[in-house]
Image (cartoon, rainbow, N blue to C red; front, side):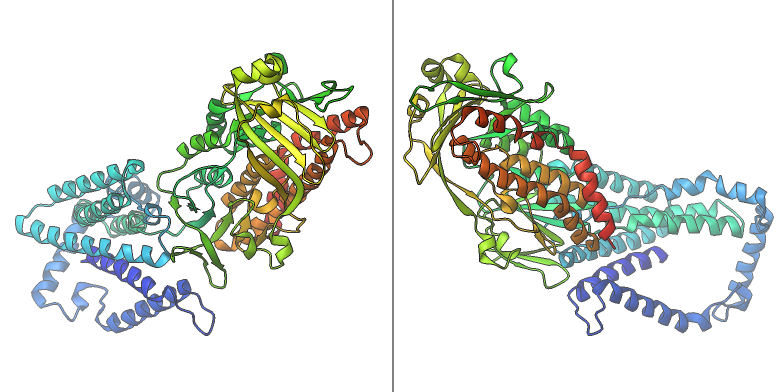
Length: 627
């Protein structure tokens, strides 16, 4: 009956938590505090009521008959004759602690985490799921006790309980391939099996040891350690990631290594997908991938394209004059990274395909267009266009330059919308054989940039060298020009180039922005996606340091402390880089030597950043602010 009481108490605790989960008391007490108050008062009240009926020894118990008292007294005496352990000294302590039978029983330890089965479930829903498990455990415990008493047999029932536990544990061990309903069903096997086995084992244990001290130690170990198996619900930090692009998916991968964090990605499309063609990644981006997860770097390499010629491996771009005139095709400079550094490109969609393979199963919800964020309560509430709502501990907006999260961070409209840079880009892919025939092998297979007044053109290999990506930038306010590489693009995509205004923060309370949602930049340094990678590296590590919801805002402050200045510097310097490439830079104009000097120096601070020190600074700032 002790085990039945334990199961009923746990089920009642879940029901109580469910009932008061949304309580808002006038004294400001949160639901968790009321649970302790109510259960504590009930425990104290019941203790007071039963105190008059409690007895120290059988002969003082008023509710026992004379015969029952005599039997119990005789059993106590017999126990003392069989094995007296009522003197506590070093010898008896050693015998108690090293009795193997105690630890065999305590070994039935099987914590089960309901919250992990459905990360999107609310706290109330999670508590509701606890109740039927322990109702079933109560029924199983009573049925096994009745049958055991009738059959005068215990060990078989204990073994049967273990079999149920093994079945449940086996299902959970393979949960990656199981639906959440199957995994939830596994908890029934474990709970029912545990509550069948434990009373049998407890009885066997007490009947096979003697002495009040050893029995007391055994019971304390069983109740104290073995009862950890009663952990049926846990509420880890629940993070909602808005946006299933490269930034959001990489953040999810980075968070998946933390057992105390659960996350769900909410994507407005019907499936994962990226718009656009090639992405460029420099040395800083490569390092960020490796630091977040070696698996990301390995997956990236299966799709990435580097310069086609080995001797050009560390070349960022070879810059030439692209417009017609006496300097046409003249080399301005060839910017190289350090020997161990490389520059690479990849098709956006191909990279995302590889990243999605690294996500834990069931962590994405599609057709979820964010329309509202409410931070007035203990939880953050997100509302979507389909009318659904979810609650979480924090939100990270990774939903791109037209972010639906950004308006809930900045009240001023001018800080929400990106600014048009007066430049447009024409993007397209050219089969490598056609590119080689038109430009020659060197230009087609390696990274080149052609500069002119009011425009510039980039070419670089993608698709493991099967295609050449062409991006032609033009100043929308000036007369433009064309070259043979422009003629290669058939039906190009046309993109207006935007950048975000300067801000002082990337978060508001527990809503934080990442990647283009936080700091969209022009692409003249090729660092848009690279900055998102750095964001994910820093933010995931900070969230990994959080133990409670009280740590979340300090973590976002730590993120701000390093990411805001670096990202804003990229935005402003990329803007100036665009002018330099269009031969309109302040102090350089169309002077090829001055242009070369700027191109050689102004990007290196991005590549050379020590990201581990960068993170250490963010963590130090977080530690200063955490409660």
